[in-house]
Image (cartoon, rainbow, N blue to C red; front, side):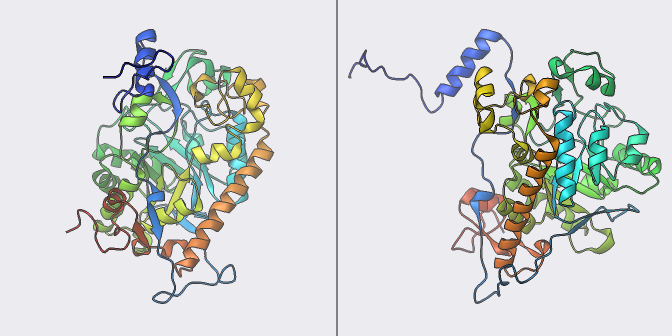
Length: 446
């Protein structure tokens, strides 16, 4: 056996104990606390990149470039609500709280979404005047914490989203560390300033689907049956959760896969709880189809919004081909606003990070002014400019999705279907329930 050289020592790591694992063991031993961070799962998971479209040629007829129309509008919440949401594009902004984000960031999200005719969502902690004022369509999140919740804001909203779980941490509550709980945040949430806050993981006044049905009726009564009611679940037992949400009376179901981001939670949660977005969509669609409320079932249909790792127009188109009516973006929206932008390289270096590496959203030291409550840092984000950047990004996503739909011969994004897709890997084929490329085989299909 050769003795390792003293001038070029072997790194003591293996596939099981690689340098990241060794570092985490050492960090845990030094501090005695688990690691908290933002962002989403960093491990490689089967995702939309593992799917390809079958463009039309002979057996199917493509649409001509930009000369033939491909519509993108979507109506959300027509099952029971008097005033469903009519959006110009099927790409919405996911819930992110004031507290996790700065007031300027919330305003920018509203500006960008409104410019292209879509909706944004409040998140935990209540509704800010900046966000309501700049959002043409605003969805109000009703969370287990009830932070900032009041009937007046429910009535001001255009839809209500009851949050049962989040893709980054299904079964777990939110976290907001004390350094981000300023006087304004504390006032909105009725919390002491500077003290770590942990949101509950389940609603305090009900424990199951029967109680959820009662809660949905209460919310409809408070808002005069005007607002669509969404139910959001973190992707785990998706088939059963979607069925229960529909039975309880939801107008829209939101399914958030484990690639979804978070402002702060335990790293062990982010990487080890939930299922990939790709695996969750077919389960949700199957549940809706079996209940007779999937796309095309008329006024009684329940719309499906999918979130968790949506990055491009290709992701949008693939999610819709698998059966989604719309998608929601969170992490990508923050990047579009300016998160981790190279122009803040010096400021990132001052806090021991660099553009593209910063994920300590819980610390409140974000130089980009997005995930902070420090008024000086927040000044680095111009909500008008950031909103314009987001609107540009949303337009690009829409145009990319339209391009792919036309290539498949579709005159509307909602006309995309699983038959337009094939998978590159056995895992993606089994999860998405589309054939492996070049075959008719779907692993696990009867």
